[in-house]
Image (cartoon, rainbow, N blue to C red; front, side, top):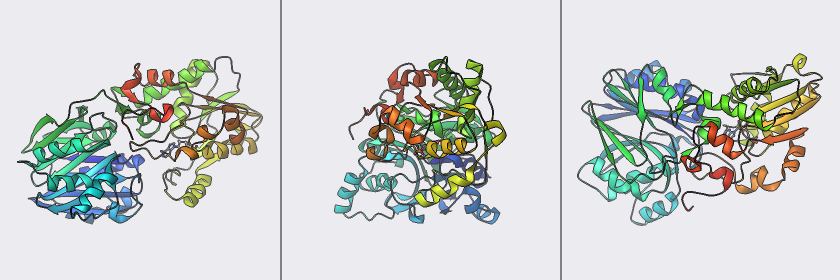
Length: 447
Ligand code: AMP
């Protein structure tokens, strides 16, 4: 994942950039950065940590300029280090250019090795820098021409924002794996990973950037071009399942509505299962449980109090920290749980460690039975397109049978949503509207 946000032609560019990144914070908590264009000089500030830890009033005041791009990082490729914090700024024969990237370039290592052989010196270990080195080698008339020439050399998933003197450029890979939306705020244009960032910044959502499309905003005007023929839209379905904020719209569908519908689908698939209450693992599980309750008539109850000040536990790249924060995060509400048969919904099961802890927690608090319902199918294959999933061997659904997983997590029953139900609830209908390779092991591109 990662979140990107850009704004043009605005005297408060850095501050609106801050608002955008703050709204996208759920997409990554490792580092945050903003670059502004101050009359042709790029001003840059990035740091490790949350958006409101990295930036303060003084820093934002120094980021002068009417165009800005920003990034929040969740490491997928490259280690957790300040040198990988984006946007990256590179000075080359292209002039000074900043880049912010969400996604995963699957041929980055091969491209990097070739470029290094030719003399390129990389600043970071992230895959995002490759495009700028390619651009510096194989140039066109303008920066847009240069990018249009080089982007097709990249495989995998990307939503890019570039900032150069006088322009902001956005581009999305030919499959549209990773999200990028366009909005307007008065005379300003906004490019963002999610619509919620445009809404919160006070703007109006215009449309998604198309697969294989590049937009350039310069002199207050937007120009669009294709740098590659669009393949069939293959948006990552995990955006709806887990990543996107419920107030965002993905693929023309409100994420909240899609999740509510997924909950109802789960209820239909589990028709006849008796329980005293249905609940969700906060926060993302809650809306699924509400949809389930409406469809089934099983009452919704909150079984866990979530401490909102700990951040997302899984999002900490270090295993020790992850375990520590997980204990702080969810506290069972014993009075609701004691003696009850509970249907508990979580969005996904990856290694199984979260569900195992949660079920144990519920049992310790006196639950009679726990029926675990997962709002997505079993994850059997890693993601190569920007979602941080572990290796195939670490994926529990790859190692154990359904009953084996049930026993591992300690639940009395376990059910995964079927793939057709998920795709339908997300507004797809035809498999290929979405990338579902983590559930099928079948990839659109050769890896
Ligand atoms: P696990 O404990 O490995 O089974 O992970 C499943 C839990 O992590 C679920 O509660 C999800 O909400 C959450 N989750 C799933 N995928 C991711 C991801 N790529 N990054 C962060 N959290 C995730």
